[in-house]
Amino acid sequence: MLESLFVLGLIAVLVALGLCALLMPLELLFIVGLSCVAAGFCLGVPAGVYYHWKLYRVLVAQGPVPRSFWLRPTRFHEQLEPAEWRTIFPWFAIGGGGFLLIVLGCLVVMVAVLKS
Image 1 (cartoon, rainbow, N blue to C red):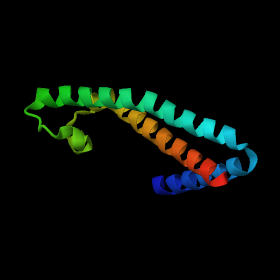
Image 2: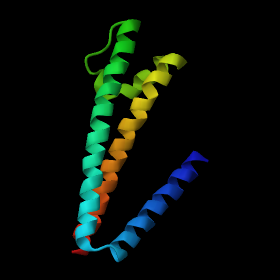
Image 3: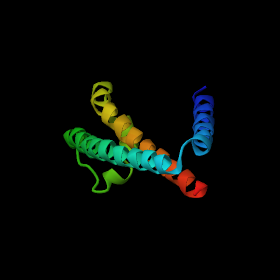
């Protein structure tokens, strides 16, 4: 079920990008794309840093933490208690949403470049 929603969402994004390429002026496409990238960085990077910091604080309380934990922090999610996960997950989701916004902005800028 989740996979089919993901595929439908991806198709909707591609159709929307195609419509944007047809209907929007070139300058507006660049502005929208760069704005998405900027918003993604402004939203996702601070949330990601705070997520890593909160995760590190929880993991330190449980024992020693590997120095490279920040490279693949999701492998430690299974060690978290439900209450700990509830405090960390919003920041994880916001950081991931920021990343998706950056990717969407890059796609819009790519469409604008291909249109020019």
